[in-house]
Amino acid sequence: MSLTSLAAKTKIERLEPEFWWIGMENPNLQLLIYGQEIGDYKATLDYPGVTIQSVQNVENVNYLFVNLQIDKSAKAGKFNITLTNSKGKELKYQYELKERRKNSSNRKGFNSSDVIYLLMPDRFANGNPENDSVDGLTEKADRANFDGRHGGDIQGIINKLDYLQDLGITTFWSTPLLEDNEERGSYHSYAISDYYHIDARYGGNEAYLKLSKECKKRGIKLIKDMVFNHCASAHWWMKDLPQKDWVHLHDEYTNSNHRKSTLLDPHASQVDKIKFSDGWFDKSMPDLNQQNELLMTYLIQNSIWWVEYADLDGIRMDTHPYNDPQEMSKWGKALLKEYPHLNIVGETWYKNAADIAYWQKDALNADGYNSNLPCVMDFQLFFAMEKAFLEPQQWENGVVRLYNSLAADYLYKDLNNILIFSENHDTDRIMSTLDGDLDKFKLMNTFLMTTRGIPQIYAGIEILMEGKKSDGDGKMRIDFPGGWEGDGRNAFTTDGRTNKENDAFNFLQKLLQWRKVNPVVHTGKLKHYIPENDVYVYFRFNNEKTVMIVLNNGSEKQELSLDRFSENIKDFTKGYDILSEQTIQFSNGKLRLNGNTSMVLELK
Image (cartoon, rainbow, N blue to C red; front, side, top):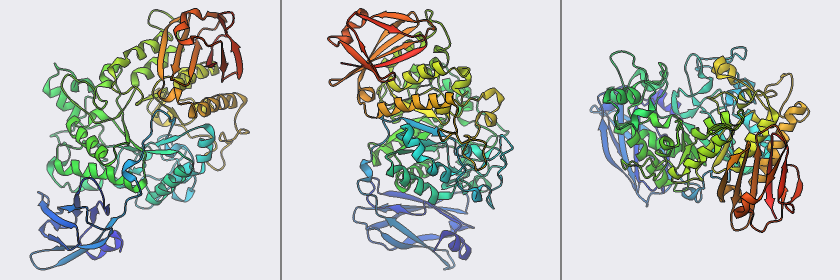
């Protein structure tokens, strides 16, 4: 019996999570039950290996929290949870414990061998126009409105997985897909109104399961974007909160001051810290109080549920520092207890490495804090890349910005587990920053794909898509040409791209396909040399291979003396440039460089 039909016959309107699994490391499971005066009921069950540890009432009589213990003897199967009130009325819910996937706990998350493709589903491809607008969900499709829903969906993504595989992508990250039932601007889905259901306008839970399976067929890993700092004002519980402190309520609307520095600042005032952490991200995004134990358990279980249900390879946590640091440390620890090799990346939007490194798991922080967040986002390097290729070299400008950014790597606990990127859905498109310069595109992507960390690219970079945040997010996040039937051209195909776009696509494809099979740039050591005359040289090397990367950010041809790099060149006499597909001899001790070009030399 479905939950919908059950709710029609009983007062149980919601029970979350709707099912669970046997064989979890943590034997405890908290059930949230919602219904009119459901708090007046007592819960019982009779199933081997499953016991009710406690039943917890809260100030809102429409909620009941039932705490189960599932020991290792429990078998997969279904059983009734019976709720009985003082008048003897019974409500029954058939609960199911499922078998876990084989070796589920040992799943391997995304890592530095991967290249991640980020996309915003509403703006990528429309695979099923019939779900563009859905009854019961407020905002309807309006492709003429830059800030409206355009109809991109999960089936559209599935239809383009072969395209991503051909490009050389190994990991896929979508911005949130969970239901966002706000009246306006719901296309970005960062205001979540239901934590257990994929938005029906994207295709619902079944479509997401299909996406996961289709990714696995192609060896593509799947990252789910999660948002725990805030929910949507349209979330179902906002109409009837379980407890007054479920969210941070204020006498009058209080926005976050967005000063992330207050968390790390030893001199910060308490009032500023509280306004940052307890203020709302936006008027449509109530701030969740993660110090509420019932809520935090709910969020932890929700994460585990999605990893198990959708066979995820990773999680990206939105606005990570906005969350309660101590509670999110517990969240990370709980996830890694169930999935020790899962990777989790947090959005750590700071301008300097010291602040970013603080949030990486096992960082040597002076205050002893451990985030239990394995992967952080290198915004410092992003800001360096925004400017590095547009400037001539000076003491701290030009490609020296890249050198200086990486020189701060001593701060990080795990250099291989850092997400690196030149743009994402919240920033200017890098090709707008580079004014459409194809040579600079090639320099930048050569660096991105050969330095340390996990490269992430944003949908459309491969066809030089542009967009400026100053024009508004909706205009910046334009549709991928060819993702909709009737589009003027289809840039997913060679024929649908311009010569310049094909040049960019082919260049990036060559880099990605090469990177995929070269562990030396996944986990090899990095040694770099102070840039001179707009030329930045660095090496990636391990016991099997040495690769020399040369970036000439100047417009003039140069002749580079190789003597300076002898500690890495050693006895090598030539290099095969994977970009030009030419072998370069080192016999005269010189290397000729064209202006605004890069070389990736496999040393022989």
